[in-house]
Amino acid sequence: MRAGALRGLRPPGGSVCNARLAGPTGPTERRHGNEGRTAPARGASGSDNTGRDTRDCAMAREAVGRPAEETFSLWKREQARLKARVVDRDTEAWQRDPAFSGLQRVGGVDVSFVKGDSVSACASLVVLSYPELEVVYEDCRMVSLTAPYVSGFLAFREVPFLVDAVRRLREKEPCLMPQVLLVDGNGVLHHRGFGVACHLGVLTDLPCVGVAKKLLQVDGLENNAQHKEKIQLLQARGDSFPLMGGSGTILGMALKSHDHSTKPLYVSVGHKMSLEAAVRLTLGCCRFRIPEPVRQADIRSRDYIRRTLGVPGPPAPGRERNQKAQRPKACPKEGSEEPAVLC
DNA sequence: GCGACAG
DNA sequence: ATCTTGTCGC
Image (cartoon, rainbow, N blue to C red; front, side, top):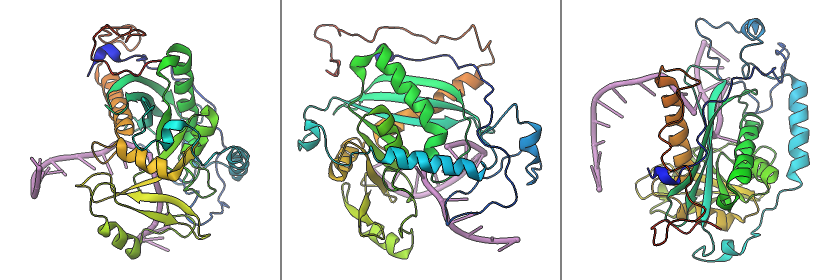
């Protein structure tokens, strides 16, 4: 990688012992459709389903167990409140341009996990030049998740750390602020029309696109035989078909992003962008099946975890990898081959 | 008991 | 998300 252009690398953050957001669950939980199911338990050894383990270690880990029903009420209210701020049309000039001229920086975010742990994770934000798709900024940071994964509420688990990353970028390298973010997950293709891509978009005020690897089965959408037939009809990179919800609204598009990929991507509007532009941009960012910004965020966050856990050395002092060129350049060298992505 | 389930 | 070896293909 071009170390000279990378910034924002940080030592692992202190593992703050956050209090759990939601208390242990009672046996009277009610579930609605496919939503709101608890993530698979990952107890060290024989895990009992009595909810005991979350009690015993309530101070140490969290993000396990099912939140109280009251928490879901709060989360739903918050989603409804923020949903009113979503803009589902193009707001920037480059979005209307066939070649996206004017677009220079595309961001990608992701959260990767430490294998046997549902709390420790690495949140990453990368910025790539467009259309070169070269990484010009990287920020990986260890975080302690406080909320468990519950389908329909992914944002409450991951978004706070992604907003933090955007804030750090805004403070330290505002010139590298991406003009759009590709998010691993859905936008308006969601139980309540407000997925993680919308959530992050509203909180950062950045255009966002939701890119999911699997179909979220909501509003009548099903990964059934008919859906699979449509997928098989996708011939070449760029082929797509609309995902129409029960109300007749188009919630997103299934997109074949690579000539040799069987599974499509599920693209939906996050914020400040039309579905048409979202699909076109996603395709413009694909060297492989996964859009490069999201792919790089994923690769780098996993590498960060591997390096952080793999090197037994002192976790605190011996940090700082080869930070060759600290300054990527607010002013790249004359005649440099650096893509012109700066302000 | 089995299956479903954005990440 | 993560657990996992080889395997098929460019």
